[in-house]
Amino acid sequence: MTGKGTKQEKKRKRDKRECTRCGANDAVMSRYNLNLCRRCFKEVAPMLGFKKND
Ligand SMILES: [Zn+2]
Image (cartoon, rainbow, N blue to C red; front, side):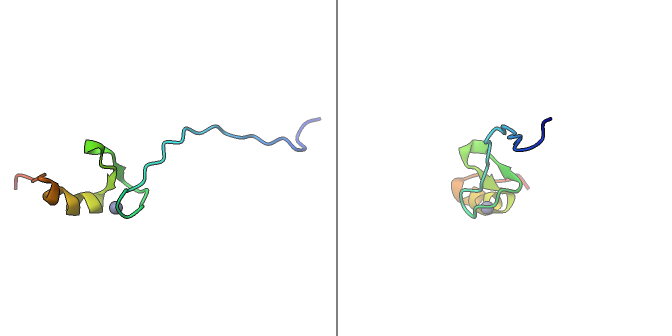
């Protein structure tokens, strides 16, 4: 019989991406090695020189 004390530890790849600015781990993109979430990227991008051609 199995079941008691059987812990299934899923080995997840710790690919934790956190926004280096606000700590959000949602919609974080690692573009340009910045690891910023959408929001922060939008705010920081202009300061870094990234400009959208509008
Ligand atoms: Zn952020």
